[in-house]
Length: 180
Image (tube, rainbow, N blue to C red; front, side):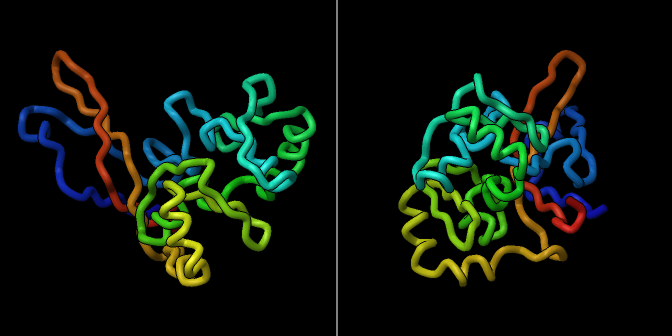
């Protein structure tokens, strides 16, 4: 497995706090899928609907599937079944993190309504302004995406503890993506 490289250091480290950290590989902090606080992927939008009707459509908790430790919601039972049959076909590129940010070497959550489908793959962006930038040179940005021997910055929840308190703080870190 690759190493985790912390950029900067938590303020609390010098105040008697101990950080709990681990190696990459889909464990501890790195999420292969961008999720909400409720563990819902793609903001609860129906990832199949992007392909079938070309629109961002909110899914329903009544039609949900757990895949890659995340809850995926759908607008219909039919779409839920399609996803179950072939999740890789319908899942967004880069786990639903902003494709532009991944090309820049980091992860950022996305706006599910800022999307495009290219060569049969769903790409989501942070917002529609970023989508417009991406559309000017999609091949260039896809070429810039870190390869397996490069590192990508991710948000990592570092659990800090002292005698009387626990907390969670987000720190950007670099993970060797070949370990994931």
